[in-house]
Structures are given as structure tokens and as C-alpha cells.
Image: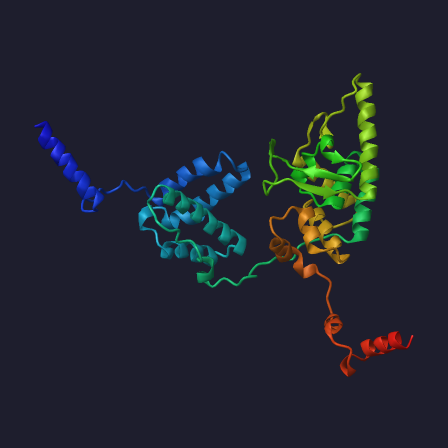
Length: 351
């Protein structure tokens, strides 16, 4: 009997190896695998806001269209159905692309389990007839005079927030990055600060790009931060300690909430008699003023912490100063077609 069973098992193994015996896998539906993907790859490592946004995209736009499809039956047509549905509903290009990325993440998860061999989302955005710059919104920035007015109002109305607002305008940091700043990250001698974390929704996390960066400090900002540091030392001494609170923009020793900053920001803008714009506009303003002063885009990219210069160009490229065609004349030879260069060369020879 044992020999007969062994022969049967051996025969099955041979058939399986040659592909003659088809063992049907218990293949999950897209909906079920998407829930696993969120639990394994998103919730433990991404921000809470990212997890909620991905969950919302799946719930509202993806699962109603393809949630009941077994993942091993996925083809590009199913992906296109979702993206075209989102387009018909008037979603922005960014939202549609994010929807595509969520589907792609789930299907990469399916590839890990060998339910699929290739990811059918590749190239899908090009197939739905979406203009490349379909919904590029004009970013809102403050003028130099408006920046000066905001800081002047803040200094008189809420001087405790003045260093924070100045740092926002002078460095272009995201609000969460500003609130996470610590004194040990400041290099006073070389005038820069290392940005490697963010405070958001009561949690300290990495930066949006998960990478640290070095942000230069202007002379005025360095002087203001030195003044704040001296105040913090005096506060510590009054409390009987030499150790200052390590958080630069703290509230009673704790990280300041973003909502607290936004509330003060709103009041300062009202007192400055300016239309409300989000605090994030300090970041756009920083970049726009650097670009207006003809600083290299690569420098702007490094200060902003963008993952590529293409992102900097896509967001701020339209702010580049207009260039006239006289620039190409510098490439010409000194001929009758470029008389000014010819004259300069002749003068150089005669002198």
C-alpha cells in the first residue's frame, strides 16, 4: 500500500512539474487584496492622511468599478475603466493619477503572490486622452511688499509667532517641518538647518519625501533665530536649568499644533488686510522670489526638497523670467550678421 501511495504522489508531482496537473489557486478579488495591501504596505509606514486618502480613493472610485474582479483576471481594460470613470466625474489629473498609483500598488502586491505576471497599469494614463497639463492650477504667492506687511503685523500682534512666520517665508519649509525643528539641527557657523522630520496630526514623522535636506538660513533669519535662542536660554535659567527646550517653535514645551498656527495665520492676514491664503503659500512665495531673482532651478529644488528638478519645473517653471531671443546672439560668429561683436573684436585688435 505504501509503495502504491508513493507512486501516486510521485506521478502527481511529475504531472505538476510538467504543467499537466492544474491546481487552481484560491484567487482573491481586487477588493480583498486591496484591503490587505492597505494593512501591510500603507498603514504601518505611511502617514495617517495618506492611508485615509488611499482608502477613500478605493472606496469611492476604484472598488465600485473593479472591486469584484479576481486579481488574476486583471488586464489594462479594467484599469482604464476606473480612470475614465474618474475623468467623467470631473476629478483632477492629480487625483486620477493617484487612483492609478493605488491600483498599481495593489497589483504589484498581486505580483508578489504570483497572481499576475505583469502590472497592467503601466502606460494607462496615456490611454485615457488626458491632456498633460489638464488642470495645472496657478499657484498663489505673496509679493515682497505683502510679505513685509504680514511680518510687520505679526511682530506687533503676535510677536511669539513672528520667528515662525519669518522662517516660513525665508526657507520655504512645509508647516509640519517648521514645527518639528530642533535647536541641535541648526549650524550657526555655516548658517543652515537640517530638515529631517515633520510634526502633523500629533505625530512626528519623516519629511514628505522621506529624505533629509539642508536648508540655508539668510542673515536676517539667522539673527532672528539667535535672538529667539537667547530668549529660550533666559526662560530656562528662570526655571532653574541650563537646558533649553529642544523644540524651536514649541508651545509650553510641546510641539505646536498645525491648527494653532493656522488660526493665528488667518488673524494676521485679516489684520494685514489681505485675502486669506493658506500658510503653504509661504512655501510657494519662497520659491517664486528665488526664481524671480534668477537663482538656479536646481538650487530651488534642493531648498524645497523636491525629489526631482522636473517637479520644480512642473510647479514653478511658468514663473521663470521671460527670455528674449537676444540670448542666442551670443552664439554667433563675429560677422556682418553680428556687427556689435565684429566692432568689439576690431577695437580689441587696434588697441
